[in-house]
Image (tube, rainbow, N blue to C red; front, side, top):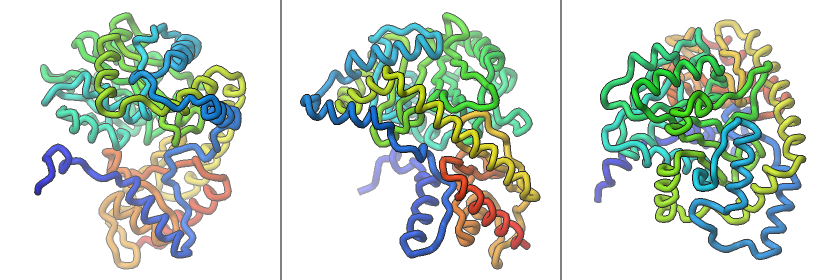
Length: 398
């Protein structure tokens, strides 16, 4: 029996593929420094864990409404008001089993068969697959390294057709760490409003920003943008709750209702215990202290990684302003060989570097084959050792 075309066309995650190879090598006793981490290397704060234990003790273990508990929706509405200056009612908020689920259901609610979705490149590798699953068509817009890989209003305008339905904005960005300024987003918003489009704004890394940059949601740009933007966020990066699987959207009521209806058939409700703990995560003042500590630690590692990369001749890192990744141009080494194997792209580069005990993510997974992605969600010691191995690998290229 053949698989459906929709499923057969889905590409496997290169991130998971490289990570699996690195884990296999480690299991065989081979030393590998992995730069693939897509999650904070902090444990979930104890106060959140304690809240989950309380949920178990009081029997908060049953189904909740498909769109999430009222308590968590209120906590998220308060968060949007405090952090983003955005006012949402509880029926404009939907809790999902992780932000990936939020994204997929939001795309399904907006995109019809063959609708075009504009996707700035580099992009998070899951976006194109979710768009394809929803029946949409990706329109990739290659963004200039000189502009920190951010799409401009002019580039957006050039790629809009009568089939364009939606634009995806990811700030802070994975894989580049780019952060859009208020001015940049306001210019983009004017183009979007002019053409009557929707926006899905992925803001999952909003609390991890450096160098005095500020997070700004495009939903704030105008009344039109507020009414045509789905803001996606979650608990995973901000509170190091990746395994708890709590994502959420804030959206116009008709979209929120559609997403809730879909979830009632696809996933039911998000985990009740994780929802209970998330209320505590958002409302307890200990959260601000944890976020501040984590952000400071990541900033120190970011600076260390850039310092070490600047000491590697031929690589060109894009200095990130957010998230916990550095996007590095390594195309200067293409057509060179390692142990007789010619490197023709980022996948070859990553595969050969793994032989030297360093795991990186090939940029082709993010739509830019000139680059690799390095995560600094690892210890300073591993950053230093891993980049030493990367430097040694590059020195051996002929």
